[in-house]
Image 1 (cartoon, helix red, strand yellow):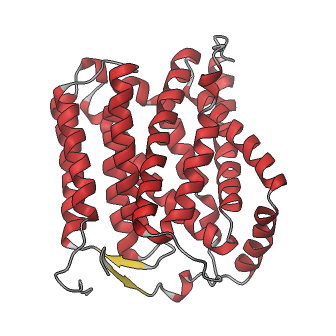
Image 2 (cartoon, rainbow, N blue to C red; image 1 turned 30 degrees about the horizontal axis):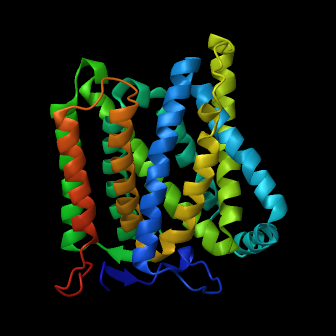
Amino acid sequence: MPFGVRHRPHPSRVVRVTRTRSFPVWAALLGSGLAGVLVALQSRINGGLSQQLGNGYVTAAVSFGIGLLIMCAVLLLSRRGRVGFTRLRGELRASRIPAWALLGGAGGALFVLSQGLVAPLMGLTLFTVGIVAGQVLGGLFMDRVGLGPGGRIDPTPTRIAGTVLAVIAVALSAGLGGSADHGPVWLILVPVFVGAGIAAQSMVNGLVRAASQSAVTSTFINFVVGTALLGAAALVSIGIAGWPTNWPSEPYYYIGGFVGTIFIAVAAMLVRTAGVLLLSMSNVAGQLIAAVAFELGAPLTGGLTQGMIAGTAVALLAVVVAALPWRGGPTTVR
């Protein structure tokens, strides 16, 4: 295998579905990279809306709620999506997919919430580099233990080197790129944790997509779970701080949910082809390039620093290194 050694998943995690034609790996990585650009766009939109409202919890609930409304309309128009629920119920009843696989929306909810609470404090580039490290670390772990729909993928030296470079990128960005305008240094641990949740979200959404044979089904379930969690958090926040009154009139502040429906569906479709780690890596490249562009043109706070630029460059190098084919022979597991 060019990107790692695959093993048959443990019987308790096997999802028996009719095999469909997969995308070429290069096409899957390109599509995931473009989805990464949308991730950064959503972070910029939701971070800006949070600054306007002064309430990150309401911002997150609005973003996910709009996404859910869109997915309701898509589901009504998609016969394949509705049939996917029938297939998914059958897989759940037969215990061929675990019930916890339906909770991928929790990872997405945590990400959108952090966009509103953390990104405005530390800036989009530093926030994105932290997300990167969490994604690649989480992706490496999940591929290694075989939690993804493609089974177990052993880490090759290039994958491990790419992950180490991603951690170095975080250190560079936080150590050299941080300032009083970007919050305390320890704050970067929050997006690192959230990034690991995004890798888990891609994994479980891929399982649901494989079981239902429908990206529409898996994306709809993702938004139902995320909206329920964020709606409850927003109600608590409103009860404490009151209803936000400074709602912006510009329409672009409210398209974050629409953007989210696209990149979540893309990740669910492509994770089986690329694996969790490579999907995360290519997605990260798109996120980083777009984050730097937004930081230059429309910064949330502080703007770019030399450390952030260096960290972004190292993170992009990590993507390239991790995607390199390893021809040194199979990696054994003990």
